[in-house]
Amino acid sequence: MWLKEYLNRMKGGGKNATNVSLHVIFWSGLASIIGIGTVAYISAKFFNPYDLTLLIGSFGASAVLIYGAIKTPLAQPRNLIGGHILSGFVGVASYKLLGHINMPLAAAVAVSFAIMLMHATKTLHPPGGATALIAVIGGKGIYKLGFLYPLMPAGLGAFVLLIVAVAVNNLSKHRSYPEYWW
Image 1: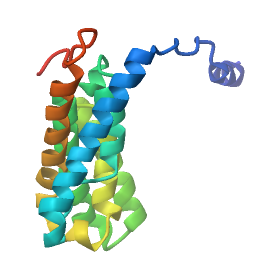
Image 2: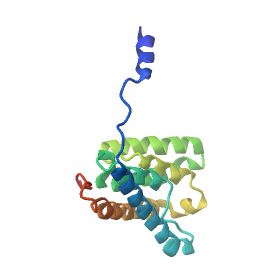
Image 3: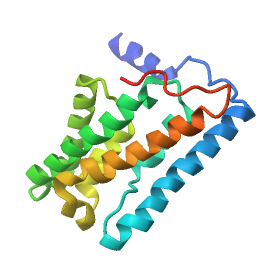
């Protein structure tokens, strides 16, 4: 009985997402090219000469949320900024405590504890899990940043993405971002 019920839950049953209008596609694309482009430009112009970066992989997923799914709670400013910064701290702490002992464990702990902390602080932002993981597996350049990593690149880069989200998402009379700030 339990096994049958368990397996039945895997069938799905919900409906596929509705069609997305060309308007949403256009504005999502425009905002994301400006947002990621801005972070990449600032990184190349001001940070790369010093062997630093402002651009991390988790920002790609943040762009999907804050430019393409702007109404979801996961895309709101509190979640974007708090999720990246808190997860960055968790990732760095996990690497420093466990990375030299057991890298797979450090990676798992970083993501798990980041999720729990984001839930507890109401800052759940799925790309934050990647931000925590990058702190563990990111390599020498990321390791060298230590506890600066949550603030720069994670926090500062997320803030730049947020500025673009507020500016560009509100250019269209059919879009409004954010839903709430805090």
